[in-house]
Image (cartoon, rainbow, N blue to C red; front, side):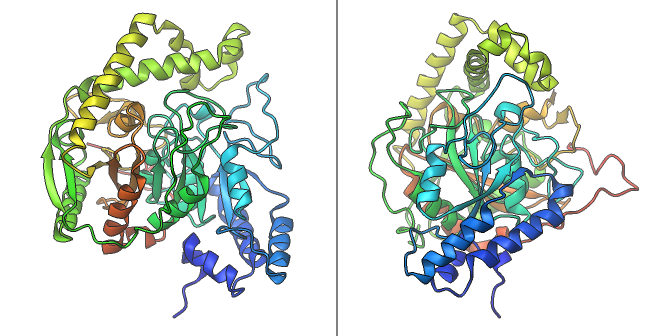
Length: 479
């Protein structure tokens, strides 16, 4: 039985397009039709390209001439709305006046176009990429719940099969959080691996660019295209870029996988803990050696990243703060931007000192292991509008709970990936997080691909389940 394009990842679609078994025009038309049918309720896109079909026709004509221009020739990809784009407006999820963004391609978008990709639309982001809800986008597994954020539009669109891949940005977990909640793959590469030129800044020392995809091999393919030195981003590193697809499928027997029991375990939903423990067993059965780790001082990291991110965000919005533009922001974002002014120089120095300490502790851990394994999130998708979550002995905000397991790898700049590892009792996706040494994405992807091949959780289609009228709260509380 042939696999329908809707169920295929980019690698599969690209093969069909190159062989001319699938027309780029047919693919783009089918996705635009699906977006028109499904997205009025899902609300993952803020703008749909009015030139995508023309670009697809150009791609088809080039194929007829034998001129495929790259590995993504004719592949539609969604762009998060904080990436600048030449042919579509950018709003960074905000309607606040005075923030005008030029219509040019961000470096990552240009690399995708140069590889033949077709930007099909702009996906919603939490305002200025500052949050984990991405209102009003809904989670395709349960429309009463959030998709996560701030790259929630891309996560929801990829999960709902509206597009084979989407771009995201990650400052405290904003690629991996929606990847986990929506049941897709989300890759945050090493800090400096992908240029951030043309991405609306949030925190200069924490922001990362990366993809959300259907499969690990798609993440590897997009990293092949997007990675590389760019002098226009001063944080971008001139580090060799290997072929990340080349090592996929190699055995992981003998590799050492670290499990850090402090911080990452013990305060998660029981279904999450069980799924991740099963994942550890699965990797052990593939021959990996499981190494128990303890990494000191992680409990202080959330305060450090908040100090750095709050201050950085306020610095970017300084002119807006001076002219009172924050009055037009959503309540949660306005609060965060305004309190960033209260972060003192002493707070920043202490936060940076802790960052350096954690980097040293992680580097020491990576002398013993190849990758570190954790849950991506301590919980599955929560209800829209829910303001408190009870996972520990105290109530937490969704923002605090969301970041707890993802932020260490932003603070340290190490590459990390989230991929599906099961479903909870409400049939909501659970994410597995893997992290590796800086610029060792090849090892990270190799282990992630080995796990993905066992279960293929990402092949399941979300039901776009509507809220149960008999349950106006939208489902069980997280306890």
